[in-house]
Length: 226
Image (cartoon, rainbow, N blue to C red; front, side, top):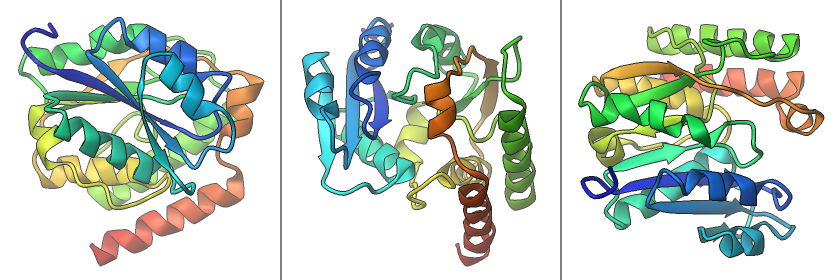
């Protein structure tokens, strides 16, 4: 697989020194290189990630998940990546789902693949289902495209998407922006059911209601400005 196409995993990380190493080592089973973008981390995330075998890029300040993801994708492009996988640093996504996520791209049937945490029997907290539903509705309102798990950070970008993706929104609203990019650029889209691991830690790191409202307003505002 890796002999034909260069596959790079991009992991945005903010203060994830206790979690990121396991994500890196698991992802390395399926990719050629792992890039960790330490997004203004104040803990040992950069050192832990480097020790685990990742290429580490550091943002001096916390710029947001969208900005960190784009930094990683740009670095992957510079390395000659054909395919880029993005996933969270907190262990919420299972890297062992990477082969299934890759398959539609490797088969030439998709330019971008979205993980769908709601497509299998995952135990997802009610509040997360509510936030995801709101995000999906907003994404549909802005893009005209329904994606079952639009706010999930686990995605695969095929060669065309790697070349063309241009994320401008710096924080959580970037997930909706990626759907809009997919629609505007006429990328072939697929969704793949994946596992998700929720814990008190990952729940605490999620968006609050207030930040969710701010994200929604940014999505709607910028949809008219772009």
